[in-house]
Image (cartoon, rainbow, N blue to C red; front, side, top):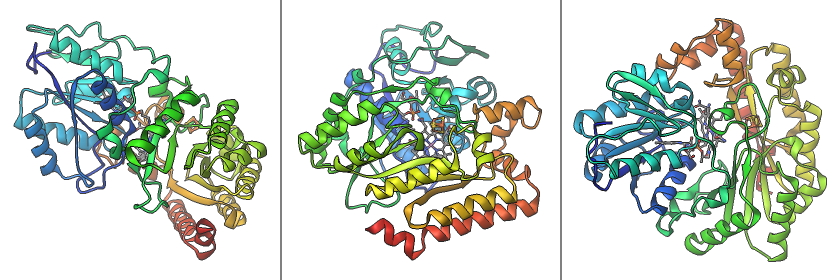
Length: 449
Ligand code: B12
Ligand code: SF4
């Protein structure tokens, strides 16, 4: 590793770039977790500041922060823009080490390093310990840094790309540091319906998922090994944000918040017993809740649950390997509504195997659910690197890794090409119809109740 100044205090600059300039910045739990971790170790770290992303502002901030390491979160949509920003930064400051992390970089580490000369390294999987180790090694070094033993790292050494061993996951998430007080406002995010003046704090309560939905690449970063923070730790975080951020509303960010029923129960009972006055939301699977749990969650202040339903057609649910039926999904959505909690759900349209019949089925069931549920995230299917469906398609020769390097739209165009034009029109038609439905008076009325 040659780019940085060794033996001195290292500065890290972190950013999760949007897909293109002038877009609103998304709250990135990944960058926040890394920032909190490095700061707890008294490392110097800066993050991009601004609500909307602006390349000039970014360049100015990087110039004034003068980091030794620039770290970017890379996903399937922002990858190209990460490359573009890296190129700009390398032009203005040669003495900087540019590292990518996140789900997309984790899967495409070698290809990225072979093809994109301005990216110096990729940190695969969980980033905290690997990034901290690189910083430590640089600070302790007096010339060149030996990175061969840094687990979880892929990097370029002269012209050679080296892929080190994997790093094991942090065993106990309770050991992760709390954020520092001045970071609290960076945890405020948007869920699509909470008014901006009622600040919604996003708190990470666990990582990973044990399910194996075909379209998802959770396995990449989290290796299908779910780990949850304890009730005590979550309460500690809630109290931290209440005290330092005047927080009243929370979104608990975790793939399947209710995966462990007894943790959810004890968490709710704690909130009820101690009269902790907060409102909260979470995301989970429809097969990970039941009537009694929903009742207790409501009593404990839960006001909305986001379910990963994805389709209301059984053949498609089966193809996705979701592991539940459309009738279970519909019953749970209704049950959630009856419990007084607002059910939101995600829908993917055009998953491989989708026909006009399955599309119509999903649409009619959404209509049938009517006021009971809210199809919040409706999207046409998008291939994600590392997902099982992607691997299958690759094996069949239907797609190759080149698709990721053909511009941000590359993979989207690929998915579109997968279907004949008339079918693409049906997809857009249904997408729009669901969006209309979502904004219809009945739906909105239900949400406001
Ligand atoms: C919350 C979430 C969102 C939020 C916020 C995203 C954000 N910027 O944080 C929103 C709703 C905005 C979102 C949007 C999208 N998302 Co999303 N999202 C998630 C979700 C559920 C949780 C992410 C999270 O906060 N995890 C917790 C933190 C701690 O983990 P992390 O971000 O992965 O960070 C760790 C490591 O990855 C690594 N790391 C991350 N960044 C960096 C940077 C550096 C420098 C280093 C060293 C390490 C590092 O270290 C971190 C700490 O250990 C994940 C699934 C999951 N469980 O990961 C999907 C997921 C990340 N999203 C995914 C997708 C596909 C999308 C969208 C493309 C969806 C779409 N079709 O529009 C968009 C793209 C966003 C964009 N660029 O505009 C995919 C990504 C797949 C891929 N290969 O890119 C995932 C994995 C889900 C899936 N389907 O498989 N998403
Ligand atoms: S889609 Fe959700 S439930 Fe399915 S594997 Fe991914 S995170 Fe788990």
